Image 1 (cartoon, rainbow, N blue to C red):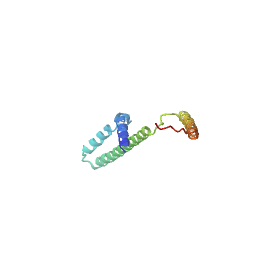
Image 2 (cartoon, one colour; image 1 turned 180 degrees about the vertical axis):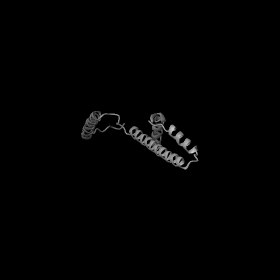
Image 3 (tube, rainbow, N blue to C red; image 1 turned 60 degrees about the vertical axis):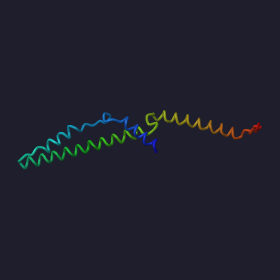
Image 4 (cartoon, rainbow, N blue to C red; image 1 turned 90 degrees about the horizontal axis):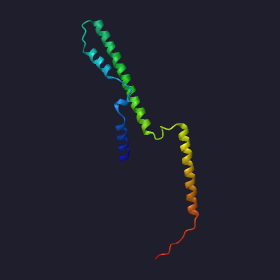
Length: 121
């Protein structure tokens, strides 16, 4: 349990805001400015309201994109071996299978060996 928490903390410390490909501050600034404006003309007010709604939807899309990027990068960093190509993964798998086969053979060999009794002193 503790190792999982420390692993998550390490992953979070490696992932920074600079890693995200997103820029939301100008959009937030535009939304705030459009909310601060208070036009007296009703047609202009409706147009400003519609523009603000559009900007808010755009901001929501950008935030969803940021969430997806964070989730993707977190999953990629959490999966071991993801940085290897398919060929490298297959080669590593074959190497591990050979090691397993050799270790099983050695284990079988040691099981079938004669046991020696050590005299007690």
